[in-house]
Length: 430
Image (cartoon, rainbow, N blue to C red; front, side, top):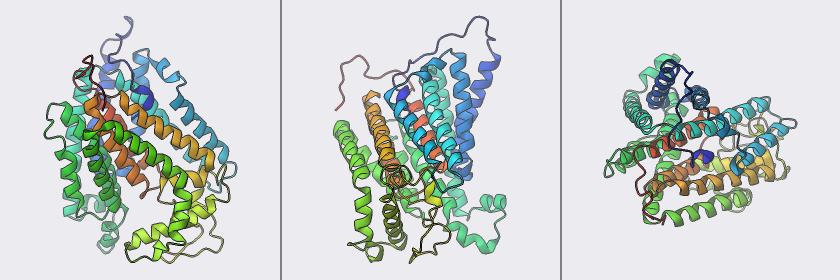
């Protein structure tokens, strides 16, 4: 969730007397409702359209903050904002040596997602409780619709997708085994956690865990192993955090730190002495990932301080390297290393890895500012995001970044439903 917004005020000030009472506010409320309702269907039918949703939220949040006279909130230089800003400056500087012709566009995409997190979190934190409940209800309705749409599409071999993209019948196997269902499975895997928290916050605490459990059962026939891993990691974390959120958080802090420190030697070990890319214990796509990780780690060690440049993963020349799983063409890697920790090291070096680690640790620490009942859901979302980010898509793909953003903002929205249960009671975090 957006780190800077967790201690935001719970109510917005009244607009200036000279402001029009209904028009602008009514439009903003209407657009916000449309955005909340459309999120689930958009993830189900057009996951690559999610950046449009992120841009809409950015515009809405800026307008909403301006209406409340609260734009100054996003101008405060907190440690989290400073770390994200420093990473963006590093990424911008690295466009000078990046081999990718999309490097500048990638920096701009990271920038508007980061700004959307900052402004969206601040805007949601200042919503009146009634507005937050309305938007959360629309998000749940849209999420249910999106889940049903995806189920029907999958059961009927994606007729809407084939019609929209003019996919001929002979290309159906490529569609079913390709990224179309996998993208949606991954996005819904993120969105189940804010949905579960919203159900909990609406007073259906016993039903809340059934949201991710039901989705986990729905994932079984899917081809997306990353989604299966993500929902399994989230469910395990939900259970652990209900026993002790404090120790679960400490464990994640240690794991994330170890991931950044050890990802390069681990990748070289797996693809080298352990030879896991030929291990019969791994399925073929996992073997291929091990091979990719070895190539990426080798290149990362050539530029250990500042990296190969942002978005370089898609454009590294192979220099004679070959693959046993798919032909290597003009680029060494298939667009990205399929591991966020490794991609950060490869493209921005130790400096970028240190900044990214700092941001993640601050994000993890920020979950302590939530109410105690919300901790398991927030930590489950964190676990799901880390699990899929370590195995699936390129971390800078706009639709994937927008997916993380949407889940974080909807979780923040869900925490804003109802009164502050336990506030002022002296209840402590375990």
